[in-house]
Length: 139
Image (cartoon, rainbow, N blue to C red; front, top):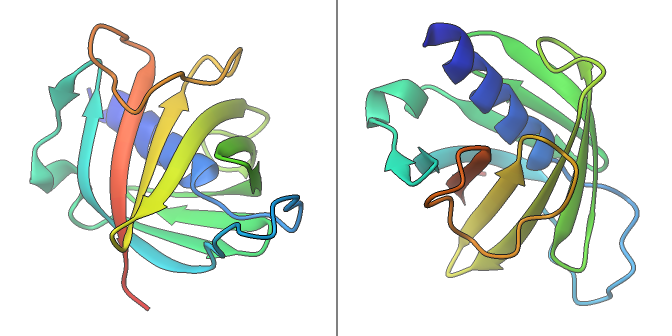
């Protein structure tokens, strides 16, 4: 269970990173420090104790996720889709796909941990390999 949580947290960081590859001029800048407000996988909510000390840092096209360990990589995003490439940590060499939205001062990301396609909605219910996280910016 602990390894699964680490994997999910690192995946979250990778997906949440920003990129300089922005084709939409209305695209929000995701640079900054983010903390999760809620997380779920397969429709099941995680207890706050699992993610309360996590921090996602996005700086242009790089991300760092601080959790039980540190995960770093490259993030490309635009038009509501993300591609996350792990470069250091437990997700080294992995590619994840995601969709995202920024509304009401919150960043919502739905990750496909298989990385073979983008999720079609912001929900993980009945989809065991979809991971959903809602973040707020802290600076």
